[in-house]
Each structure stands twice: as structure tokens, then as C-alpha cells.
Image (cartoon, rainbow, N blue to C red):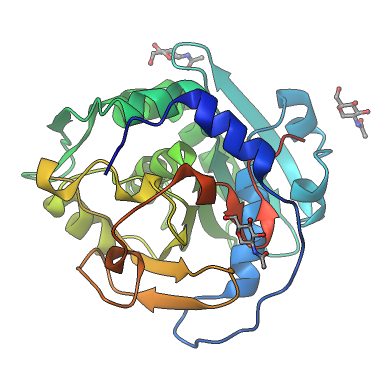
Length: 283
Ligand SMILES: *[C@@H]1O[C@H](CO)[C@@H](O)[C@H](O)[C@H]1NC(C)=O
Ligand SMILES: *[C@@H]1O[C@H](CO)[C@@H](O)[C@H](O)[C@H]1NC(C)=O
Ligand SMILES: *[C@@H]1O[C@H](CO)[C@@H](O)[C@H](O)[C@H]1NC(C)=O
């Protein structure tokens, strides 16, 4: 496998992606909610827009998917160019938070800056150093804002979302929100890389509510950093095959002949196409 995918190739692949629209049949029961995943793709994608467009919720399809979003606060920290937002969706009665990927992050990941550092909340846990440092940039603002929203909407559920590296940030955000503010009911990510070691994944699975990691076909990013480097996925994989019309739900990060682990080659070409949309498209 060749992990040296240049950002030029990445950008090119974005240009090649279609923006076709379709609905997938609900094929599989479990607790995976495909309609909610579609909404989640909107929450995740909105994080890519300018702060002002997030703030006034005018970001095209990504925002239109969830018209009930209010109380929006968007955050940006220039240290690692990390961006995200918190808000309330009155239609879902849900406090939401989402994080954006950046091209800079992708380069970091693909160059495999995979150094693991101690994750102090649990014994023996380690996480990707770059992801943790990036999350620290927004940690105070996000936790403060979520805690304000919890005071304002005490009966709301909590959901955290992200695509690509934004998914990795969503993982780290949700464990802090869960431990310091309120139980996290939903974590839906798209094309999310691995974040921590086996102990971290276990710690995570025991605490967070519905955790679904969507993977489109041969998307490369969910397969890095490698297991042999000590990285494991949390949560449940939902694997969409090509042509993206059916999915399988698989447990945790086991080798599994039903989901994406049965594949032997991966590509950035499949990294942006989720829920029938190009979720890398700008606003
Ligand atoms: C939201 O912000 C964008 C970017 O500045 C602007 O173009 C748009 O008119 C604003 N929309 C509303 C409803 O204020
Ligand atoms: C931005 O990130 C840096 C480094 O993590 C941190 O020291 C700083 O407090 C952050 N800024 C804000 C406004 O939170
Ligand atoms: C499935 O996703 C690929 C991108 O990976 C896209 O080119 C293709 O058009 C999609 N198929 C359908 C039926 O939407």
C-alpha cells in the first residue's frame, strides 16, 4: 500500500468527484440510523465553511439539511488552523459540535506523524500526538460553550460529528465533553482515521453512546495510522460499498470479512463521497 498521497492528488480527486444525489434504502436494523447519518453529514460539512457562514448558518446544502440549528458559536485557532463550532438543533433537541479537517492536517497524517502520547484520563491509554495537540487548541472554548448550552437546554441530547481529521477531533472532543460536561449520546464520523491505542478504544466504547464510523468503499484515511503502529478504532464501522447503495454494520476494529478490512487497496478518491454527497465541497 502506498500511503504517500500528495495533496495535489487529493485536490485533483476532489475535482473529479460528482455531486450526485440519491437516497439509500434502509437495509439494516441495528441502532445505526441512516437518516440521522445524513443529518450528521450536514453537521460535519458545515464546519468547513467560513466562521461567518457557520455563524449565520448559510452554507448551502450542508446547512439546509438541518434547518433548525440555532445558538451557533464558531471557533478558530491559528496554531494548527483548527476550526469547529457548537450549536443547538431545535428540531432534534440536540446540542451539537463539529470539527473540520484541514489540508495541513491531512499532510501531517499522511506523512505518518503517528507518535503516540499518554492520554492521562485512563491508565495505559495513548493517542495520536498531533490530534491531541490540535484538539487542545479548541478545548477550552468548546467545553465552555457546550456547558453553556447544557445550562440553557438541560434536556437536550449531545452529538459530536466530523469528517476525516475532523472526525479524529470529534473523538477527542466527545470524551472530554462526556467526562467534564454531559454524556455524549451520538458520535457519527465520516472517513475518520484511527486516534488511539487499544486501551483508549476500549475506554471510549465504554463511555460514549451511539458511535458510528462511516467508511465509503476504499477510503484510505480510516486505515491510517496502521494497527501495527498500535492504533485501533473505537465504535462501530458502517461500510458503504461501491456504488454506495448498501452498507454493512461491523463491530469495532476487528478483522472482518464484511466491512472495509476485507479490502487490500485504498484510495483518496473515496474519501469525500458520503451519504450521496461530496462532503468536501466548500460552502
Ligand atoms: C451570512 O454570512 C455570509 C458571509 O459573510 C453572507 O454572504 C450572508 O449574506 C450572510 N447571511 C445572512 C442571512 O446574514
Ligand atoms: C489556541 O491554541 C493554543 C495552543 O494550544 C492555546 O495556547 C491558546 O489558548 C488557544 N487560543 C484560544 C483562544 O483558546
Ligand atoms: C459512489 O461514490 C463515488 C466516489 O467514490 C462516485 O464517483 C460515484 O458516483 C458514487 N455512486 C453513486 C451511485 O452515487
